[in-house]
Image (cartoon, rainbow, N blue to C red; front, side):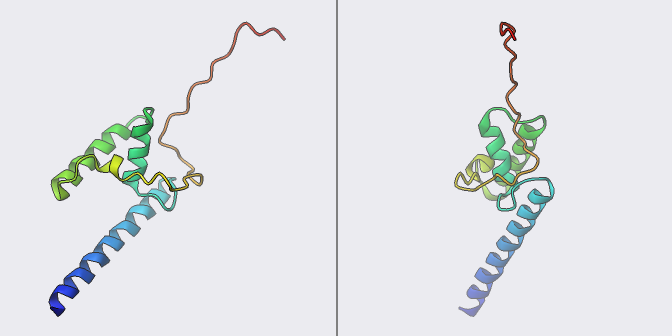
Length: 106
């Protein structure tokens, strides 16, 4: 019984450690401090206008998650829509191009 409890504690500790590293790396890469890299990739892909390389990175992370945990669509499933990402300094989503109206007379 004690062994099972220790396995659960160690498993939870490893999960928490991995999550801390994941969010720290995301912050170093200019993302929100409370968002994982997977969630950030998923949010960019879901937007429909991810920056170059983001789709490929998301596919790699999705492939790894499937191989390790049999989880499909890991990045999109990792999006936490309630998270505030306003502190993000480097967006992985393309900004829409603004058009200039040539018919305006000044």
